[in-house]
Image (cartoon, rainbow, N blue to C red; front, side, top):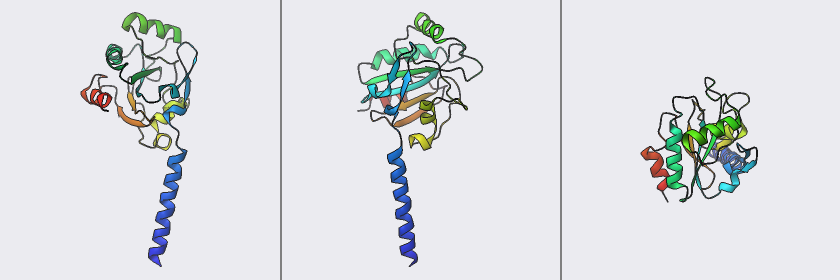
Length: 183
């Protein structure tokens, strides 16, 4: 009798887990607004590897913009894209408007990868896409809050969270390059 109860409970737990996995959103389910105020559907990136990064113009990590652009230039024709979200969540390091941020990135770093409008990446006003990136209950993979500007979230070709790299990790880190180049 105990075996039957245990087996029933195990089957129930597995069924709940499977149903929870089915109800999870994909990265591709999100639509955001780009830095020009236009709607940007993440489903337009289906089949690509994606790096999502929160950025700021007055941060010690701001020089990573140069590395991000180099990474994008190297792999943009090889099924890879970077999607940047300016955010002012850390020490007021991104106080500018969307127009000011866009101009700063163009003039100082020649940024050509997709830039989205300024959002909140943590706290009560956290953007839904960042809730998905940071919460296992949303992404089905792991919990990893944003610790500072230039945190990198890697999304695989199927819209699943693949890895997270903390701000101090260079966009040109060997682990990131290896992930992009994997078939």
